[in-house]
Length: 508
Ligand SMILES: Cc1cc2nc3c(=O)[nH]c(=O)nc-3n(C[C@H](O)[C@H](O)[C@H](O)COP(=O)(O)OP(=O)(O)OC[C@H]3O[C@@H](n4cnc5c(N)ncnc54)[C@H](O)[C@@H]3O)c2cc1C
Image (cartoon, rainbow, N blue to C red):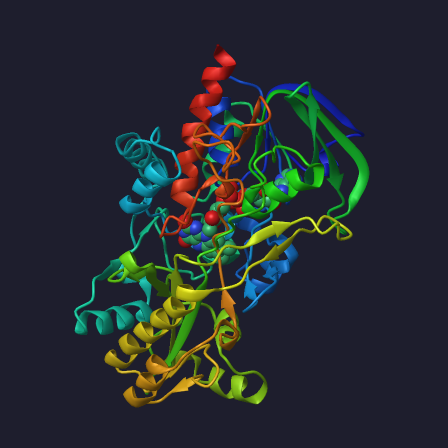
């Protein structure tokens, strides 16, 4: 059952086989796999439960309901970076764009060779990816519903002879409502809330929503369960009621920011000192192009096509049609200038460029701030600043090739490019991290990394903690480096693998 606080009377105390903290890309698959094997599974999810009936295409409403900090979480450092995260059943997958890519092979090779993860075999991983793609109905975005922004951008990329195409997505019959980030109103996107979680519940799992795990129960080097508190839906604060789970195995799947924070608060599982370190986020810049003619109806898929010509250098361009509310925020101007440009919204297109970090590593910290609030320190450094500029220049080149008259960028001194000459000026300029206004990132990773050496990693290749028996960590935090592409499929693949090891442990 999916239980809201009002479905629960008083405190809860239960003994279960598996307690899972978090119901996103990591927690959902584990809950489904283990409930399907007949284990008693309980999931604690801090966010609320929302369905198609609640997904009303209203960005402000969905930021308030389904995002942490109403979608305004930022990293501290230069530049400051918006890092939105979901807080709802299905985790961030409920509000993500549905891109479902396998990670680049060289990244896996690096994990095997540098991080001591030889046990994660390519063949095994491909089998899991294949299973997930079938289960989640992954297929290429349909150009018929992708929208004119995407076809225009791709036409520019093709003119320049760049490698590009339609993204694989976990969407069944996408109609291009353009609202993936606010909950899919047609139910087409196969996020965890409409796939793994209902299947887990069908196999007997219980999901307690608005229920925050706060403390692991530890006895003699073993984790024996978890304690948490129910939250008042109106205030988000504890309502006075508690939950106490006795569990044979506990899985921490609270995401790459909240899993390390959860452990740091208690000083647990950190003999390596690596908990909270190595934060990577795939920082992204964006460009907006202005055309003489309208690009067509403002309908389409927000993230449906890509240019991957420079993926080997850590640059991946992805985009499509986004709603006006997001468009307005991405313009480098405020006030009247913003309003004047937004009057031309039908003539504008937007595209994003994300980079895989070479030099930048952030950190999640517990600064003992009031409430339940981690801090994320992150500075964009060295080659990554250069890559962010290169991604922006590449997008601008593509827009001009597609016929754009003006291109807006987030680089100070280069906010508006009106000619190839302006583009060259940006290309030749020396930029600093502090010159980039309004970066965003969507993929926190790496803060409880897996590895073959307990001195340098937090979990084994099985996702089991090196320090505490019967504790598994499985979400974006265990990926040892950014996979170079959108990570949800890889996080799910690691979760499927982890569920297999938990099954072995429970049945032995
Ligand atoms: C706008 C946006 C678009 C994106 N688009 C894509 C995309 O197209 N493709 C892609 O691959 N990736 C995309 N991503 C990223 C992807 O969704 C995430 O990488 C993935 O969901 C992370 O999985 P996770 O299990 O680590 O965390 P999450 O999916 O975030 O799940 C963690 C869950 O744990 C809960 N939780 C945290 N702490 C506690 C606690 N103490 N007790 C109980 N519950 C807790 C949280 O509320 C949350 O629901 C996107 C992200 C965003 C923000």
